Amino acid sequence: MLIRKGTDIKSSDITDEPCYLRRREFIQLATGAMIGALAAGTAEAQTPLPNIAKHTVTTDEKVNSFQEITSYNNYYEFGIGKNDPQRYAGKLTTSPWTVKIDGACAKPADYHLEDLIKPFELEERIYRHRCVEAWSMVIPWVGIPLASVVKRAEPTSKATFVEFTTVLRPKEMPGLASGGLNWPYTEGLRMDEAMHPLTLLAVGLYGNTLMNQNGAPIRLVIPWKYGFKGAKSIVRIRFVEKMPRTSWVEQNPDWYGFYSNVNPNVSPVRWDQSREKRLPGLFATRKTLMFNGYADQVQSMYAGMDLKRYY
Ligand code: MTE
Image 1 (spheres, helix red, strand yellow):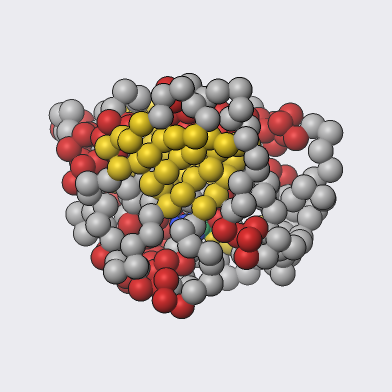
Image 2 (tube, rainbow, N blue to C red):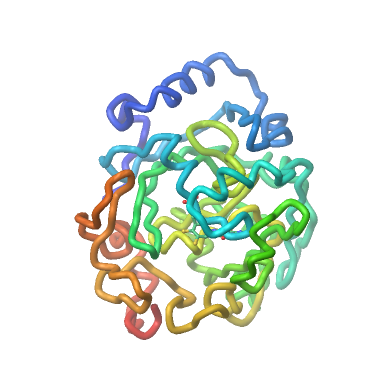
């Protein structure tokens, strides 16, 4: 089993990040401010997320530093350079924030972010994060299982896939002008993938609310898939019958598949997927693991599927 209860492991064993240790002290002092914290979250003023109920560590590898995780990003609405999101995403207003849940479900609703999260316990999950561009990191996310939100919506038998739409604000997003993708950025998961316990709706990083460049105020994290499946700044979650057309598949279906499971044996895009560069390193010296190291937990969902065809 890759997943171990984080409570068995001291944070000092897994990271030497000083912010992280300070954050632990902060949590002990803070009292029930989670809701306010989410409401106030902006890139400039990251707010602590107290009351994190559970800590799960899925790898013994060193956790990347806050600086590494927040300065090398893909968020094309803010530009194509890896540092553009850090430079420009501060413009995005993340409060108030509403997420629409609709489509094939019994309980569609528009939720204020705080109400979307409130009934569920926040969890920290330390996950490997593997980009299709063959770089990787280890990231301490904070969030809630997507499954909790899905169950509450009571999807009908027609709900076979879940589509995610992210925010589109031309006035706040300078990268939109340079084109590239069919905006708004959309992603999708099959229902069993959405319900999988590893799939997280992240609202935090290193114990605080997310930085805008990482997808504030709420994003997807699916650790066995390439990073682009992790839609940032989600505004709509829709249950649908047919496989959604996602932004990347529309852009280039030969390069990007709907499933996009990390697979060292299939390299349909221009980057060799058999190896990866662990940031801040410079070279792709690390072997990529099947399903990014989460095979024992997810491979049964793909039993009998030709993963070369359905990449
Ligand atoms: N979400 C939106 N809205 N826009 C984007 O451009 N980029 C994706 C994904 N989510 C993207 C997005 C890609 S290509 C990757 S690799 C991951 O976000 C990067 O997440 P990170 O910057 O937190 O590492």
